[in-house]
Image (cartoon, rainbow, N blue to C red):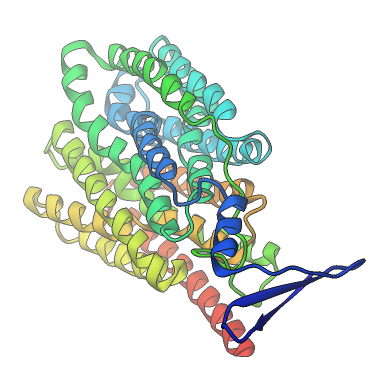
Length: 440
């Protein structure tokens, strides 16, 4: 269809629609055009959309415990099962592998049937996984439960949730996406603070069982509030609509580039997030101090994610991600010379403020340069790459520690992977600018 806008004497736009069979002129005034566009995209940027965002953040804050609980119990699990640091890191790696696979599988499912049904199934798997993990008798059993149930179950509150909320916003899509993603970091700020108190009194097994009960009792009712299907995208040219931006890359090539970038940034990101508790124990500061630093890191990440959303709505996802990646590399470098207690608190705060907005920006980039159809699967694939990066990086840092007896080389390894992410973003920015210049 080809639309031609004509302007009459009264400066009222008249839209003539030429179809392949029979062209019939149709006149609409500005008010009718606005009403029509709103009718074609019910719910976008509405009060319900904001209510849905708030529910999504709460859901992610509860369900996000699946990513962070294993980090807090890592020293206790290592001591109980009598394994080395690399083996003790495997449950986290398995969690991230399951989390990665779940982001793609659940993402594809929400593209076909909406969010709530796949999310209900995932939340039951998550709660059941914590209950079963509390009964395991070996590191292998614990690793399998973490990967197959907790990891896959947690995935519903990350990539699929971000993709779902992106359909409900146009004008403030960056803010909405990063706010939904912030729930994961809120979980990382809250749960590691609460867990050590319960673990000290009752042990890690009771703590895991209690988390399972909380997840089952709260997540299912919240998901039932999200049963409405995602609205259609706003019509091009309607108020608040966002056209797909041009770029001299095929969708497949862009997807591969984002996968490489996501892998690189999250191998780097995993070093402090996965090993900060163990690092503090090695330095003699104890588990509680390490958990405090993890909470500070992730609380700062919430601020970073929200700020990145506002920035991305103004300068775009690619530039915002590149800024965060550069700052992350610098903060990783600061961990090496500054290992005093006060210094580690400050560096952890700086790290959180630097890296928090990086991962949500991938979802923003997908929506900026790719069509809305299939967004759940595309976002899920990129999130899978970031999670594989966390999984590989978590194990790799433990392996490097076992080889060298120090985390200094692990921090340098993270910086090297971070440079890969920066190179991919520079290439993407160059391709986007070339396309924009060609069209101009």
